[in-house]
Length: 215
Ligand SMILES: C[S@@+](CC[C@H](N)C(=O)[O-])C[C@H]1O[C@@H](n2cnc3c(N)ncnc32)[C@H](O)[C@@H]1O
Image (cartoon, rainbow, N blue to C red; front, side):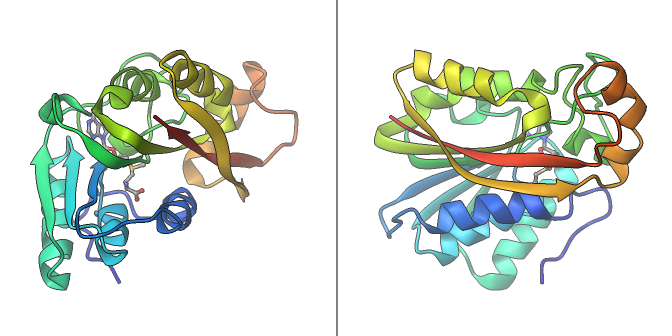
């Protein structure tokens, strides 16, 4: 059971799909893992529990980082928490595994929220405002043979993620898929998604995927 301060994203299907994929990676005391958009720290804790000796968790939200810090201390896990914008705080460092479950839900406008829990999912009109920045900057942080794991919805353009990572020389595959019912946030955007042609009429599920890219 994870502690969660108000306003912090509760781990859910995308978190657990990513956690399963992360658990299949080989991690040991020398493994350096970076969790971008850490939230409660669920994925950082999975990495630490799987044996990773050095885990760094980044989030822009103070409450999320406090939550990650508390959850790691309660379990005596070696998670280093850093507040910042995506990969900016760790520029120049190298990691064996980078995991990220970023905001990826298409929104009404291209303005990211600066506060509130919406910051955990809203990602601009195409849902890619954060995904594009992660795809552009994370590959340079990978150690040789390093692995990048990203969760996203098919509503936010899986092919673009794949092509951005392939253009930087990574080998890319879809490591996991799950069809999940719309929750509260997507249900409230059905008309918007239908109008944009993102979903079929009557569609009330989305597919989420985990993209695995190796340097
Ligand atoms: C979908 S939640 C994922 C949380 C957790 N990793 C999980 O899977 O349960 C996305 C997280 O990204 C954080 N976030 C949003 N914008 C960010 C940014 N520019 N830099 C770092 N973190 C950001 C939010 O605060 C939120 O905690």
